[in-house]
Image 1 (cartoon, rainbow, N blue to C red):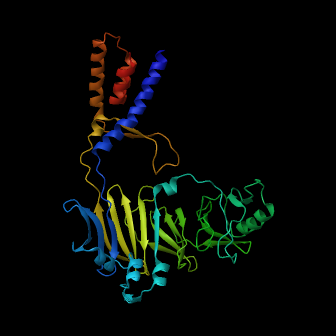
Image 2: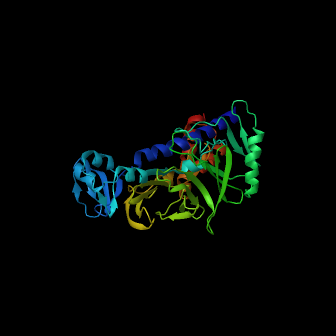
Image 3: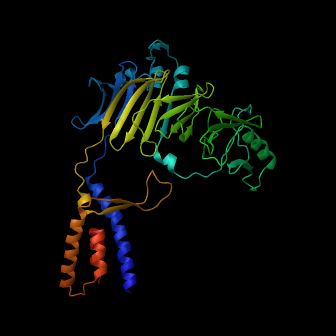
Length: 404
């Protein structure tokens, strides 16, 4: 019976280690403001939409001058973001910064790209769909098989689980010819049929080299991407921009961002605020004139504007996260237990420890436990005292409830 009792106390301690910190932060934490920020090609400054607590409504303003705008005025100073509205109203300028502006130009250069830590760290099923890139059809059609990368490339019929040896051997010969080193570390592609065109996959081999794989007229196309010295890819995401100017985003081990351009597969570095793909969120809002890069971290949001053609830095602004104040929980909560995180591949217990000063409150709680046990006229046991000294308030509450 004692063993069952101790097991229940341990389980209760772990549950409290999960619930109490969550409850504390739910009550004390302040949400950071979600402020839309975009670089104006008219004002040559960042503009924002935020909620004004004093006025009780949304305000649209120039971040640098604090000048406020009406909704229609705000549309006009952000013509690239509100292009559909301005084209509909007939208010879109014929040219901006010397560039002709029309719906075709805007739509071909406009895209949104977002990446979160969970995108990189979540587990992926290692089966990939390779579409025909020169089918001659308007819509992309499913190929009827999938491929996997082990010590070679294998194409499998998902209905029968049979390996298509002929197709596998045809592609595998190309991998050997191009010097691909198995096993592959990662493969990035878009398995959706709802895209304008097909560019296959970018695969990182065992020597951290990037290869472009696609199927052209039922035959393999494999091209090695020349990487500059010092660039070691840690994560890739492909994209199909309407202007076909690049293939994919490459995040390297030095926490730099690059794009693989369609100009001979050359890598072009994209300047960004300080960014860690394993911890921070990145949002790119691009238009024909500027790319807006937003990095959201625990400290707030940093936004940069870069020239869409040269990829040179233009301007920046920052939005500081909400001031959280002093975290008193580290003085009385010895640890916290979590189960989910964007930095882990699977659900598992994650421990975060508090300050060493929590040992003082642990000893006080152990003393209080002795007093309560004497008041109950129970026998004092060493194990619960040691447990409370280690686990603090969690073990104290569990021992008081279940130590009867």
